[in-house]
Image 1 (cartoon, rainbow, N blue to C red):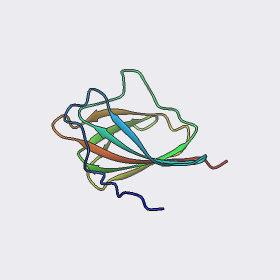
Image 2: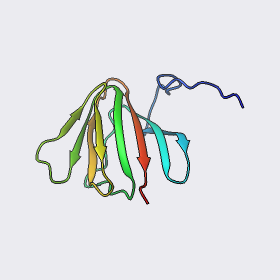
Image 3: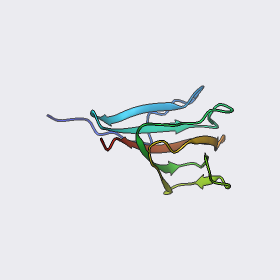
Length: 111
């Protein structure tokens, strides 16, 4: 079966009222998403606490993550990757408001 190719840098809406999250590949224990942010951040006081492991890479733009238990923010730019084991409480503090931050996010379960 022939599939169309996908370009991670195309088909981004000019206006993003909220983050764009697109599932690229998924099965029962694995999911890959493209996330596009433009000045988006987690709501005040909100923390992700996921049952899945998460690995993120920044393709374009910049972002800052707050990780519970770390004093300093984690700043990510193009080519940077970060691994978040399941139940690592974290939040997005900031993404570049002047251009798209394109994330590649991989989620998986070990059991």
